Image (cartoon, rainbow, N blue to C red; front, side):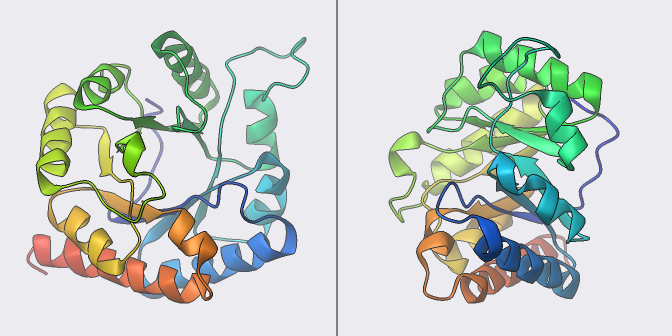
Length: 234
């Protein structure tokens, strides 16, 4: 865990995968930046590596993450993702072990250590409760608990799963920010997850495919803010 990493709770994450790039993604990033300021909610945007530099230099409150990182050192590694290059481009963190880019526990552990050495935050995905527990022991900054069969379905994880993974993460390492996800498609989904005790909520496909991506993102961010404030008696 990169202990000096600062992100305010609650936060919101948008993962455009490869649905968006170039000017389209930059405009979305600028819009999210404005929404982050409006609602006082930090936003993680995990983007293709080609977009990191441009988005990082044109936003203020966006936490720009890479969608993957290899644990290789400077030198050989054609076609791999070098940690130093990501940081130089402006990334503040990396996503690891997404269901569309699975890694072994050994690879995850090596990548977290490399990220820690360089001062990059780690947001690691896990599927089952067992995998959540195993990855929590490796000390990422953020743990995204999402059943892979629900990703992109519009059917969020049930409350039992959300409650259990939050409990497991806090028992293993209370410094890790718990982030149950998968199948999130509506502001109500974001509200329920944060109200249950999560540090954040987020969305990928639903925003990327929406006719009004920023409109949907705003409603979700507003729901995250509302749930967190209600949970904390504000």
